[in-house]
Amino acid sequence: MKSTFVSFIGSGNLAWHLAPALDNTDFAVREIYSRNPARAESLVEKLYEANVKVTLDFSDSPSRIFVIATTDEAILEIAQEIVLPEDAILVHTSGSQPLSVLGYAATPNIGVFYPLQTFTKGKLIDFRDIPLFVESENGETEKILMAMAKAVSKKVFKISSQDRKALHVAAVFASNFTNHMLFIAQDIMRENKLSFDWLKPLIAETITKSIGIDPENAQTGPAKRGDLEILDRHLEFLQHDEAVAEIYKVISQHIVDTYSE
Amino acid sequence: MKSTFVSFIGSGNLAWHLAPALDNTDFAVREIYSRNPARAESLVEKLYEANVKVTLDFSDSPSRIFVIATTDEAILEIAQEIVLPEDAILVHTSGSQPLSVLGYAATPNIGVFYPLQTFTKGKLIDFRDIPLFVESENGETEKILMAMAKAVSKKVFKISSQDRKALHVAAVFASNFTNHMLFIAQDIMRENKLSFDWLKPLIAETITKSIGIDPENAQTGPAKRGDLEILDRHLEFLQHDEAVAEIYKVISQHIVDTYSE
Image 1 (cartoon, helix red, strand yellow):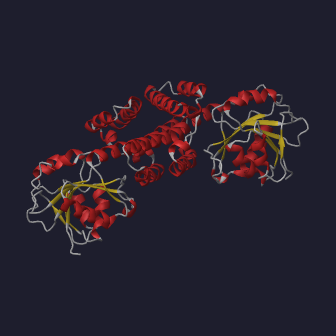
Image 2 (cartoon, rainbow over the protein chains, first blue to last red):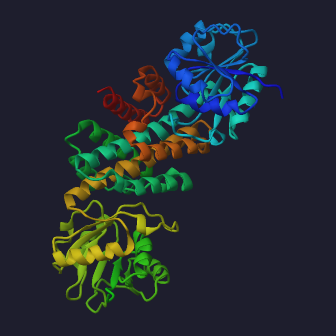
């Protein structure tokens, strides 16, 4: 198969993981554009034949696929400003932005290429296990994006903007909110001069069990048991922190309602 | 060291994990009492020399340590009813009950023996890695309970009722509430006919990262970025489920406030 070249707009965590993963496939990376050229330069050093781009004029680019891997807020502006070669495909990588945010781009070949994972710079993740979600209304574009997705991941799915929104909301609960529950737990431990490390075996087992037998079957605790006396005592314990007490209250109430039905 | 025998009151998940772990040590298990004799019988079959007890009269018991491993609600009544031999030590295993709930027992040797873990019947957990928290106001009792704890776990700590309460509230956030976030995520996926499996690599990585670099450094997502437009769009998406929308709102607000300070 002939190589299809790829250029990145953005050099954040996603680009740092996706560009090197693509570089070993038939979708080699040729250009990295970033508002922060030093960071684009560091990323380029990890790639075989890529160069740093300093403008959004890609009219002479060897690439066919242009991946916007920036913050959500920047996507619309980039789509309006970017100058593309003929037949170019423009995609964004956001879980929360509809395909139509690229509607102002100077190409009809637009799509979404959304990897469902949390990326941290410096921490290597095997891309083959990351679910990749592809969207396009253009058959040829979809075919090429599916091929690019399958080149890096074993788990590739077509998904509509509407379903991607549901997926993203679910991911906020599954990732951002679980992490924040751990933050509050750590905060309570810290306030009481107790070690967060003590909670780590419990956290690890909770998640293993939840993934293994499903969250519904894995639920335990005073709210699940409907033990209102303990809930009251915990709320009293948290009364110095109104916001955390409110979080305790609404989640507990929802657990009580879920399991008493 | 001479063996100190142990009897269990209760045959739930904790007893199923703790009794066999103790049985291989100098704290062999001799009796299991349960309101459900059939379950006590099954547990006894996993132990070397234990018998089923059908009453709470332990006056002729060979044991010195009596472990109440029941629901929180049953502890007080058992402490009042149980008949113990001379010098007996009575402990409960609850995270949320103070030591004083055993104050009505007919022995001055009372304590708490609290393992911080979520137990599921049938799923083996290595007890050696489970943090064990011991409390007693009686020096000799404390010494014996510490020895029993160290016989099964590498991680043994003395803790006061007040600190144990803080620990338990933190554990509710770290375990019960993280699990419920996963439940809501699964529910959203189900409602939209999407596969919960898609979220599993994200969940696993979120927790690995949170434990590894601390929840505060691991936080990502629209609330962390202060992206109010996406928060509004997600709330609109959730508007058919008022309780879940409220949970989304209070947690997001707390994340926004935490990271904008």
